[in-house]
Length: 402
Image (cartoon, rainbow, N blue to C red):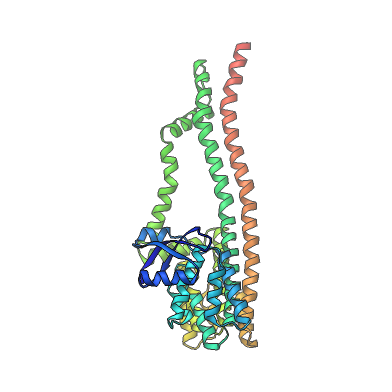
């Protein structure tokens, strides 16, 4: 179905804009009437790769409100159609309102809720539809919405951890680079002219400082573009062949400090996705398949693919994970306990909690290492500049006094 961008009026006569999926303009008009809006004009949207990339989704807070609302209504025994209608009519966010209106339209037409969710893969990944499908099969959508609420909160916390790990080093690196460029490009050249005018022989440290300053002034764009080019080349190589992508992913896991952090994040994501789906009644092979796709590192993804194949062939999950060589022995032992006790989902929840705390500690430790390292680098640069500049100045003053 095409998507329409519309302009409408609400009950107060105020203009409202948004986007809805509809069969035609008549269907769009009827959908807007159901949510208390009067259509003024509309236009069918032309989708392109650029527009899809720039399309803004639903943020974590809006998703949490959405699933909490559905959970409470389902727990109270409200029919699904009425629950979706209530969520659509009560939300103040145009994007969420339009999304719920589209889902409601699909469900009203006989489409299962899980399939209606699967039609929005950029907003709701395959885990959403899998959990809802399991809830539909068991007749317990309330539990499915509860698990999804927990999942969105956890996912938002992971995103915040990743931002925390990247933001501080990036800001400090930018500040140090800016300071170096300013000192070498503006401050040092002015002082160097004074030193050269004295005609005295300059020490080696000052000559090196002048050469560095001249290079930065002449090739500043090379310095700024080099990191971008290097990152672009690494990404191009990583996407060139599967073998190269796999090799770079494995190499990333061996980088000191950063590699263990990537591995812990991946294990935490795997355990969380597996636990949420398994506790919702999703078959174990489907849990492994979905959890495998959410791991962002290709090396770990291949290991989890091997785990799934071994489990499919009858191997216990704990033994398959041990055979892969990518899971710590602690995780394998905990999974073994979960299998023996029949509480695999609960054990995976414990694994998630353990690694979430471990990730927080690893990020704090990394930031704790970066801060003094950056301070030392800044001190060395400033010491070099001071020594290179002040040494000749003191020598000149000494000669004047003599």
